[in-house]
Image (cartoon, rainbow, N blue to C red; front, side, top):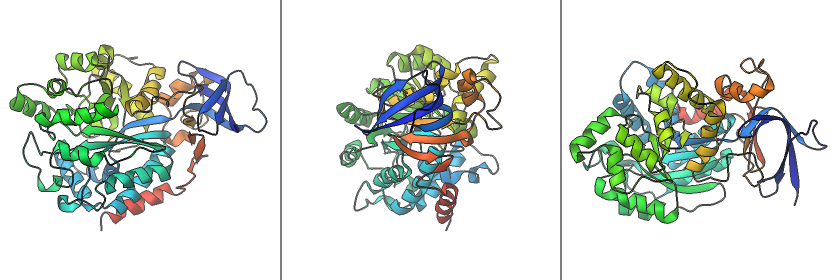
Length: 446
């Protein structure tokens, strides 16, 4: 079987930085061997200078929110006023324009070292709520966009049925709803997994899926052993409304209807009671933190330390794409906690990288990605150690340098399944990603 050898000047091997590592990648896109102590590049090897880490996993994305960047930074407002602007953009998208936008967004992710994305997808139907000829046209556009950008995608097809706790959808939410969870399940069951594609499920929130339909979505995911994600306690207003409607918190409601579990990830988990934390951790439900969006929307700082200590694996997402930079998400999780507690060192650089790699991939159903070891998918990212941000520290501190100093701009090389998608800081198949983004977003204003 033909092999490609990569010589890594420095590699992060889950616990430490190792100099001089040779990775052998087989034709099936997996790492077949990892050799340490290789001081010079073997003949014919692809040389990657800097720090090579497993590919980053963006566990929570709304691709079309990228069109809001800058626009929603004018003036003040709240999450709820931001949401009104988001609805306006959503109404303008078609399968073709969504493909163009998502292709550019996923190329931006690749340039940031992201090799897998969890797309929390709820923009299903045509304006007014009618079905496209292919009821999954919008989801297929996202899958095709990820394929062209070269990254893996877990399409988290989202049930969104109500405007709030059983109330009918509002006009601008008609594109999101299938009417009932049963009809949602019928539509999403037509989506097929393929190379580089996983199909998962999502409950938009306890606001948007009536309590008596939560279990239908949970069963669909359980029957397929698929990832199940849910926006959870992002806003205090959601908690208050849930208490008023059901006499319990959103977490308690999800627990009562069988939603929590090891394949489930709560996104944000910001405003949690002690009992909520115990339920999340005790059920091994994951937590996806999205610090750059949570701070952008003034949502608050979630209890990530307490959740992890209780047993909840942590992952990271860029959510609304105020920025797309998983290194910044990792850094922000630690720095937010420092501000909240006025103490340092809640996570090591290794722990933060694990959230951004192995644990993020696991949350998306890619348990065989996120590590540099034999048998794993050959998905990896190289960060330069000689930029103005990263130059200076000794190589053994390269992980700390990457997490606490580097940015997406320091990503130089990205490989997915043994195929190079970013080379010397340029996307191979979308070489003008900035221009593609500008064109796709401009088209939505017309």
